[in-house]
Image (cartoon, rainbow, N blue to C red):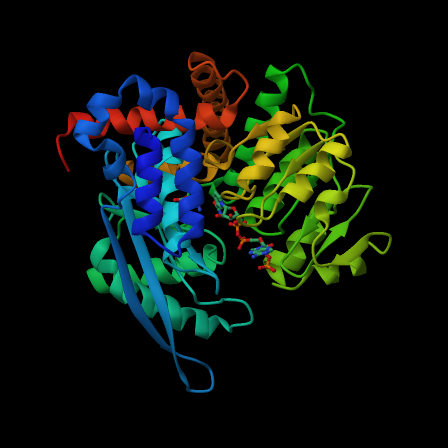
Length: 444
Ligand code: NDP
Ligand code: 2IT
């Protein structure tokens, strides 16, 4: 067996019951085979892959808080600081009942390569809790966030580890967390990104992941001789990533026909009404069933099935493993030409392979959704220089970053004899910089 297979086997044995982490490690390491084979002796001697798959540290803590009835609730908090070879740990905080160590580790591992691809100096980390913000009052969310950061503050800092949003963590939660950090430490510093615009947040950070996804998708299509204008797009999710992906897609002249939440999905063949979607999700924090009140001709379906619609482009923007082999078959049968991942690891490994084998252009999340963290890094830069840039300035930097990411992954794939395989390209291009930095810094 080769080095890659040895390490995958070791990861599974050493980290049982963490299937999402195994999946993320398999995807990355298997696509690094060509690079690893070319450097096998050196990498083995340096235990480079063993060091890459073991987080620098993983922090797990109790988060007690009092609900509106006066009852004490207890959640579990996590921060996995995976790798800081190229910069301070950087990555979001996920608040969702499904959160466990394996999920945070898969996200933190992905983040290492994604952050490397941005070209900016940020390492990989991720955190969160099994707390469910859905249905909680503002006071309950504040109570949770205060308790969460009263432990987390010990491990983070503007030059150490800079958390941000993810599923369930938006502007409200980041505001409460930032306030708690400032109160405890007395330090006004850029320790979180995704902050409000009145206290150090960056213009365009809210839009960045969705916009960036479309900038990369547009560049991938253009490179392959296809115009995004006039295309029909299916988007899943109805949160931060999905909403701004839909907005940019429409600005680029495409028609977005779907959105979904964890209960069901909507089909609106004339094009999703984004103002309505924003009001339902960002203002009312309500369910997608509300959408029919705004657009009576739209259709609502309970449960799964979103990928059965006719579309040219599919953009999964909800959560991991939401696009399965059956979904991939339906997309191919309906003539889908491109899939780009707005969410982290939304496509299962067999579905990814099926899409690629059937000629569907496939942009993996660590490249396609890197616009969010890239703009977080731009927020860090603005905080360091105590300035704020205009929306246009940030947006144009974001566009340039996404275009560069596409060409870097395209180039890496071609260099390693895998032209058009952007999964291989993204993993190799992300890995090269981190591996070089790790080797240069000695044995840590
Ligand atoms: P939000 O919390 O804003 O929205 C998440 C959306 O996905 C909601 O519509 C939610 O529905 C749906 N969803 C969540 N979990 C599930 C599930 N188990 N099954 C079905 N639907 C689900 O999160 P974001 O938009 O920020 O994040 C979406 C994805 O994008 C995640 O994978 C995240 O890691 C990734 N990402 C986010 C970035 C960011 O900057 N925010 C950057 C890069 C990647 P419901 O309301 O019913 O839960
Ligand atoms: O998955 C991701 O890249 C994010 N949730 C954004 C992380 C960040 O630090 O902005």
